[in-house]
Amino acid sequence: MYKSISTAHNYDAQMGKEIFKCFEKNMDIFTDFTVNVGDFQFSCHKFVLSSCSGFFEALLRTDMREKYESSCTIEGISPEIFGLILDVIYKGTDVLDEENMVEMWHASNQLQIEFLVSSCQKFVNENITLQNYWSIYEAAKLLNSFGVLTKVKKLIVNNYPNVVGSDDFMEIPFEEFKDLLKHFRIVGDFVVNSVLKWAYSDDSYLTPEPEKCIGLLRVDIGLHNALCKKVDVGTEEDEKMSLRRLYLGQLFSAISLKDISTACLSNLLNNTFVIDNKDAITLVNKQAASRLEFTKPALFKNYRTATAIKTPPPPARKVSANKENPVNRVSLYFDIPLTFQYILILLFAAFLFTLLLFSGC
Image: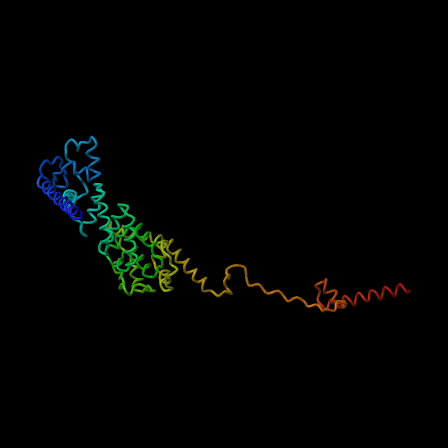
């Protein structure tokens, strides 16, 4: 039984190969559709194209000019990439590599070749490196590939020192950079320095070695002076880069300054461009005030308010257990100093004595 199944399987595979050989032999015969890509013309079959591509299916099902002329022109895809796509859909050839995977991903999405889109996405997700991360990030965002986007962001955060040192770092747009900064749980001095580097586009910024940059808790004087160096606004590119300074406050709002060192905070307070940016200096001053409040002694915690330290109330006057004493009786009902109590008692006694004296007369 197993032998017959195995024999049938081999027979079917052999038949498939023979059929494909016949198809390949006559592939250039009976073509009925021409695809113009750049300066090249590709002779194809309507049935094959419409079976694999949603784009060609919609094109050939509607009463459009391309259907009756049996030809169309494709923009946005290079002839080399379209030729590779034909190899995939006609021959089943595995053509993906690290050099063409992003272009193939774009092209297959444009032509709506679903199985090729899935293959490209899987291949790209397995081959993200520090050399191609940004092109993959842009493609993933354009094609709404959440899985690839998540992996690229994770790679950037885990290898941030190397990313800052790469050429692609300065090409990151503002919105993308702000979004990436939100993924840092702990923001150290190095992250703040990278924000300053991106905002001021200063080529003299030197990125520390990867193994040394994590945990750096200072902004040295050389870096401070470099960041305060003005950019001459001349060319359109210079103007575009200088506009990044306006985003400094928004970038600072995307990160938490509570974990940076005191030295770094001090340098930010004295940085000319930080001072000139209202939003940025407000955040820095707020963090400085928070640290000052935290380090103040508890005795002066509310020194700015009118709630001064209250003087403790005087101890309660002790009353003797002998309540028959007139002085103690007065103390129970009146809050009068002891000396005045004796004087009042004497005056009252004199008044009674005088009253008795006159009544006797």
